[in-house]
Length: 463
Image (cartoon, rainbow, N blue to C red; front, side):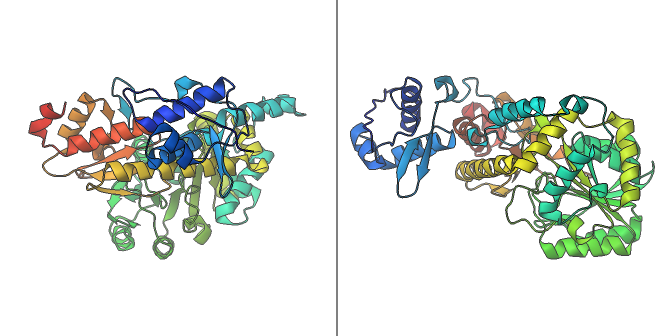
């Protein structure tokens, strides 16, 4: 049965569709709308409010994205449950500050992270042997967590024996340990010409020599890698083959196969950073599934679930490599947090982690659509499932001047210098996940586009 909902929306500043969302949230919170109640058709509501149908459609989409309502094709829209506090239907920060620098996954209401964490931790605390979890664990992870890791990695790599899988305290710790296990100071590591800053930092501290390899829109160039193997005799290759950080490139299967072939021919170990691999539903198979005997595969939960978990899983070529890496992990941070490792294992076994990833994937698609609309006409590379985009600055902008002007406007971005192993291009990485809501994101991207539309000398007219 359809109930009657005839809200009023106040005039004033701000988009009308957000006023509808706010009225919806207020009425749910006050009990005027109850869980399961069917909302009126969008066309009828538009007529009642004297607004365009597109305004109501946009409001319903935003309400659905923030968890206020559910929609079923052919049945209509229904109140989902307890409303968010009205304060959580946010407006852009009045200071204008927007963080595009932190490459973290968004935390949509649909992911129910707080609820899942609370329920998961309560379940763990009530389970037999919980106090054993609070003791020191094996540096490779206990067998239950390694088995869960093998299950999670197996979705993309195929069946994995548990003795080849380790649990680490986040990808940064694991990458530092992998470098220590694989490379001596002075050894050569091939990396993309634009590469993850955390890897660069770990390599520099290890005294490893980095050799940049040219890339194109599909990622690392196999022929350039072959030339580097012949000239530089590297011990290992590091790369992010899916949703590359920072360029967003995803390597096609044939290119992955070619890189594995070159590495095998020249005795080069592959360090595959698969931080974003779980996000695209149709990503090509990881290199570790093609050349598992030479690949050290690292998959963190920080980019597909939550940075707060600080859990990464590693698939190793064999038992000897697993023993070596476990020793390095022990020297660096003893063990991954037993509590978060156990929580992640429960999520994997119960299917909760897949649900979280799906919600983040959907939110990323929404945010990338917002970015495409706001940045149309600019030269950027992006993937619909990713948290970030790679934007090439238009003439006459230079990255140093742009960074300074962006900071004056309250925008935080990462310049290409942070990634470049060699000359840095005139480009920036724009991360979309840290913005708390769609309006803040849209506001920040519009400000970014406006800034780029003016030459540096005209910046005062923009401010």
